[in-house]
Structures are given as C-alpha cells and as structure tokens.
Image 1 (cartoon, rainbow, N blue to C red):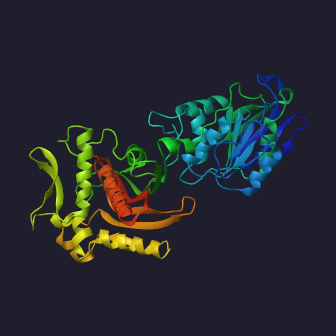
Image 2 (spheres, rainbow, N blue to C red; image 1 turned 30 degrees about the vertical axis):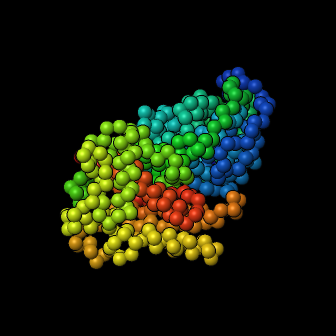
Amino acid sequence: MVGISDGKGSGIIYSDGKIEVRFRIEPEKAEYKGKYNCKEGKSYPEKGTYSQGNPLSPVSVVIPMPDKDAIQAALEAGAAMAGSVVTANIGVEKVVLNTISNPNIRYIILFGRDSSGHMSGNTILNLHRNGVDNNRKVIGSKGLTPYLKNIPSKAIERFREQIIAVIDLMGIDDVEVLDKAVGFTIQEPKNAVRLEIERDGNTESFVLFDPGKFGKEPMNISITDAIMTNGLYEALTHYSTSIIVPSIAKAYPLLLDAVMCAGLEQDLADERLSFTKELLNVTVHIETPLEDMVPSGYKPEAWLKDSKEVQQYLGKYANTYFSEDLTVGLDNGKISNIRKKSGEEGMKYTYGYFIQKHYEVKQILKVANEVEESIRNKEPSRRILISLPDPKIFKKVSEVPCFIDYQLFPRYNKYDDVWELHATAHMRSHDVKNAFPANAYAFATILEKISSITGTRPGTLTIFFGSAHVYLNR
C-alpha cells in the first residue's frame, strides 16, 4: 500500500504488513545551521557502479543490489549520487570516501535488497551507528567480511560526523517511496518532515530537511593512494580474496591480516593434526616484486640474528629452487647452501628436485628458451610453464608439493618499446605466517633470473593460494 495521506500534512507512504513508512510535516523541529549553495567540489575520488546527480543535494542513495530503475528514480528525485554497493569492504570504503569528498551530502538512504552474504547495506548502517573496532571490523555488521582496512581512521570518523542519518528503506522496492524520501531531504527547514519507519515492532524516526553543507572542507582521499603506498585487500568471502600490493614486504602484513581477520577458524584438525584459520582462493598481485623484498620483522628461523641474516637466508633459500638437492643451514656458523646426500629422507620433496631433475628436464632453461622463442616470433605466449607435481610419485614422498606450477607471460610493452616478463605462481597450500616471504622471494628470483637470461624487463608477480592459512596450535 502506497501514498495514503490525511490531507493535513501527514500520512502513510508505504505499508506491506512488515514495514510501514509514515510522515508528517514538522517545521518547528528543523535545526538549520549550515549554508546553502556550497561550491561544487572536485569529482568524486572513487569510481564505481554509481551515477552522479546534483552535487548540491544533501542525500546519496545506496542500492546494495543493482537496480537501474531505482537508481534512475533516485537521481530524478534529486540525489547527489545513486548506485549499487555489493561488497562490505572496498565497496563500503568507496561510499565513505566519495561521501566525505562532498560536504553537501548529509544523508544516506539505503533502498531495495541487501547484498546476500556481504550485507553491504547493513554494514553501512552499522558503520554510522557503531563505527569500527580495533581490528577495523564494522561493529554489529552481519556481513561476512566487513573490514575497512584500506582507508584511514580519519575518513571513517569524518563520515560518521558528516552524515546526520542513514535511512534504512531496505526491503522496499517501490520507487515512489524512494522518490518521496529523497524529496523530504531537500526541503527547506520551514518544510521539514518527520519520517517514521516501523519494522518488526520497532520505530525509527528522522526529521528531514536540507541542513546545508557540513562545516568542514572536503576530504579527498583515494583508495588508489593506498595501493601505491601499502596495497589493499578485499576479502569477498571466506572463499575469495584479492590483495594488490607494490612489493613483497607490503604483501606480508596484508596477507597475514586478511587470514587472521576474515579467515574461518577450523573446528576439525587437518592432515597434520593442526588447527588453522584459513582463507581459500587467495590472489596476491605484486607490482614490483624485485623491490622491497624482505618484510620488517620477518624471521623464518629462530637462529637468525638480524635483518641482514634474514636477507642472506632468503637468498640461499631461493638458490634451492635452482638445484636438485640443496637446503639451507649453518656451516661453521655461516648461513650456507648445504648439499643433501643422495637418498636422504625428504630430498625428493625439495622444489629444486621437481624443477631441475624429476622430469629429466632442467625446466628453468627450458622455459627461458620458450620465452626467447616467443619474443623471436613476436608471439605473446600463454603456454610457458614450470610444473612440479607428478601423480605417479605422490605415494613415494611424504606429501604433495605445496608449490604446484609457475607460469611465464612474455608481453610487449608498446609504450616503452620493450618486452616484459610477468609471472604467476600457484600453490595448493600455504603457511602464511612462516613461509610466504621466503617463497615469494624465491618466485621473484626465478622471474629475475629468467628475465636476465632472456633480456626481458621483469614485470609483475601474481601468487595464487588454494589454501592460505595460519596455524593456531604451533
């Protein structure tokens, strides 16, 4: 039921038995302290699935699940912007940053259906009400991964201060209701309207009118800035996470944080009788893998004394990928590559053995030749691969290798007139806390060596983990 008025400035604009939306004109309740006609600021800093309307409007409309008709109705009613927000982390972060870049925006209306699992609408509502905890999780959110890790605390504080109210019209899909709600927010104070929303026996009440712009200058912050400095991650669910970083050192804390914050804690012990926190299907994309390669504070072995020894250890560990029987240890007190004896337990499990001997092919040289052939033929190949597992010998080794394969993609950069070499490594399983920096360092070293052999410029490194986990009982 929509649009019943008593003719005296009040009435019901929606009722379906579950939600009822009422209004009445209450000009005496308006408290106007702002200024009209705020200068139009810069464009919103974050691109996304939204459309821009009147930049002087005091209201932005968030429609969690895409609805073109609702977006159009919101803009025609006078909203500053309207669009969908599916995810409860980067999607919500973009709403925050775009809002604080325009001090005219004082209200947010949530409309339509919330996004399943992510609950982005519920997250925005609780962000305004409750803020975030020390782990940057939105307090009270029902979303799977409502962590706002990519924007500064000052942006969250400004958002909560600037926005007067988040008006929850989720569960309603009648655009006439949205049209009226947007219209109420752009009234002059003398025409202020009290909007009441009754849901499940509880009533929320808002006095709506245009209060004028927020009394502070716009804050122009971009998530792109976060990528350039510290990287960012988006945990869509427990089964899909993406991390984009400038370097290995920047990737380590983000990957560890993603697993510890958004990972599922396992109730059952795994094959090693261990309990973990785990994220599945994690992608880490590193823009410059040969720069800033060693994370601060990382210590893969207890006997390493300082950062210099950690650097030496990682270099020696990377060497083991290029020989069939090398390990890392101490030789007369110095960090060294130690050659294992033939037949020694575990020798056939080393990555170097699989890469350099098992298939009776020295795969590093093989793929280097394939890269050179790709460039010589001016063909950007998708078939250059180092492969490790062999089902025939799984029963003869203690475990299937964690490192599955390594792909190389020679690509021509027409702007710099140079061939670049990009790499992708796949790991079935990964101990994030203890092993990530060492393996990422080794993957970057493979890229560096093959680039040197082939005369290509080292490009990006992307690492995919089937299971990224942290052990809880070690």
